[in-house]
Image: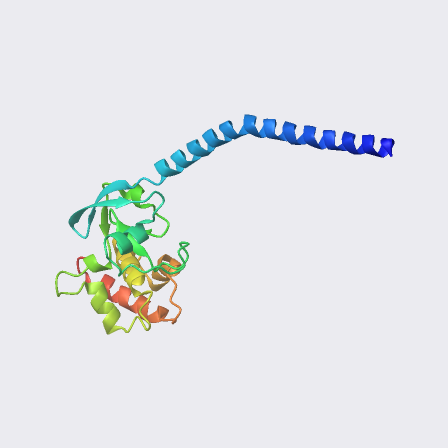
Length: 205
């Protein structure tokens, strides 16, 4: 019985020793862990500070506070209220979000808002002059170049860029330039016809 008692006591001593050692180790680690956690939260707080972005949208000056990493698309839709620019794939594959940045077409879902500071943005809302539609908008209506209409803003913005960038010399050239704009309704021939008409009209766009 004495041997068993000694064995039990020795086991208890080991357990107590382990508990004490673990406690001491924890006490030595916790302060640095707390400091690191605090630094981590400070970094997060710093990262999440909103950034002011000044830009011109459809001829009007805007100053917008945006979160880091927010896309130009989300800024236009959620901060400025210009919902004509559509969110499709949100990965730059469908072309529904096309806008013009300093005159060039851009997938706004792939462009960060802060990277457009000081630039000029044109959305589908900025093409028409009051009640007067843009020639490309009129051509799309004339040629029935849309069905559900979801991709239409991006198609029109790309169509305008196609002509402005000198890529509308032939139907095949138009098709190549417009290949990044997806129309799930399949209105491609009508879209090409609309762009071709505007190009051949010689109108200033």
